[in-house]
Length: 154
Length: 198
Figure 1 (tube, one colour):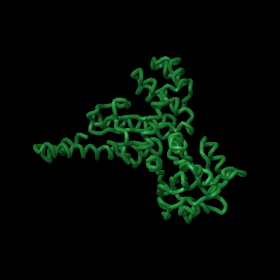
Figure 2 (cartoon, rainbow over the protein chains, first blue to last red):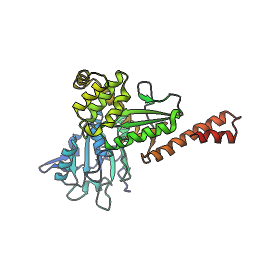
Figure 3 (spheres, rainbow over the protein chains, first blue to last red):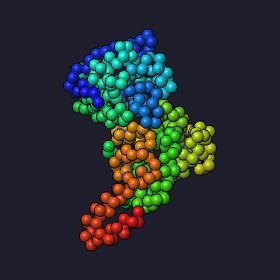
Figure 4 (cartoon, one colour):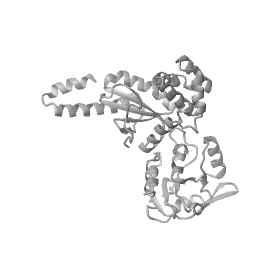
């Protein structure tokens, strides 16, 4: 498993495509917490799917003012189809060209060409306050994220 | 992973509070894996009898499964009339036909008043109740459905009858061992006989 950026590191800024003609950068969210959820690939089965789970928990994340960004190496059209099919209400960012560049910045790139299942909670000032890398086949759920968001408010 | 929300009388449970093992399921009425888990739980209940208490909590993937939330709210509505389990069972037994019309017809079948149910669904009267289960689950490490907890510990193994039965037996053994420690007169042979009952 990769050595992901630990809590206490500044979160490297990035800009990634969310649609073919629109990019999103991390710095746009300065002033509120951001959850970065790197995941291996679109189109995993629904009932145990990490992104489908976060989509349902989204209102709870937003209670903390937090924004959720999903990131994988899939391209924008793939993301668009996936998000539409699953009725996602948060952006999926395409870490597509150069492939996995942002995942590499966060230490979350796997040699076989996909992102790790790595989670980062970034505070309003752009510092990583919690990070976790799950085995690729294991959905880490939301317990760690919710605890980290709670800690931010203390 | 530990269950953060203890089972309380507000939950929907079958079996006694004193049961040695409590099995909690977080489920979605439109999830096919939960549909497969439905007869599994019935078999476990037959097998373990009074030793097992079963609690069902809502964990609808409402965005992925368009009928999951309404079905969960319908079961909660039925609960207010003392008919949660009838509705719960009917929903799983008719999982492939889930629709607004089916919910209404199940309400009629269970003498719950189809119109009252429809009104409750429109008003989202039971949304908060369903969401409370959901958030408690998310905070306890539910990451998909169905997720089982046995005496408060998440079951990460397979969800078939045998795997769950073995896990439940381990908790029964533990309870028995604790009891025998408290009752020194219970000999090894007696403990074995008691254990064989399960």
